[in-house]
Image 1 (cartoon, rainbow, N blue to C red):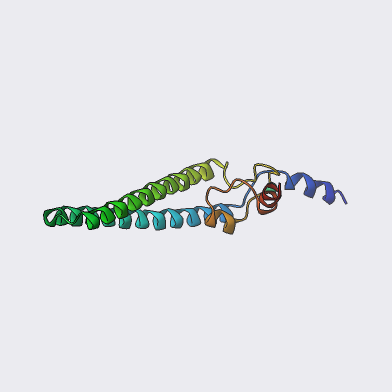
Image 2: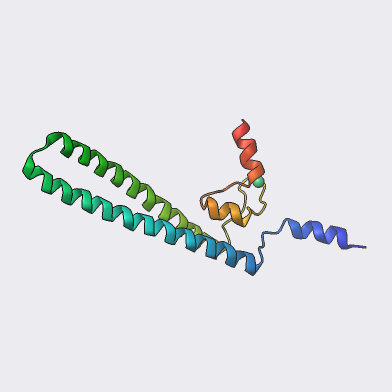
Length: 135
Ligand SMILES: [Zn+2]
């Protein structure tokens, strides 16, 4: 009969099952690998654009060179964004190891695994996030 109070105190404790922690870790590592692959791809494209630009400068086609420079700048911006996201995911993996990751900053509830996999930088649960956006 004392079960009800026990359940209540347990729900406020910040614990996740080992299986769930592992699932989050796997999702984050997968995410990091995806971003890393995308980053490597972008760097290859930047190198190619750079090479093209050097080839073109011999022909002195100014308009084309301008387009290539613009494309290259876009790729560099993309690469920087990807690098930032990789760092975010890596930080999340570290925090997960310390047991400080995946808890809503507002209500303290566990953020669902799927949400963390999609948004590794999420610090709020879905309902708190919705409240935030409604303001
Ligand atoms: Zn919340």
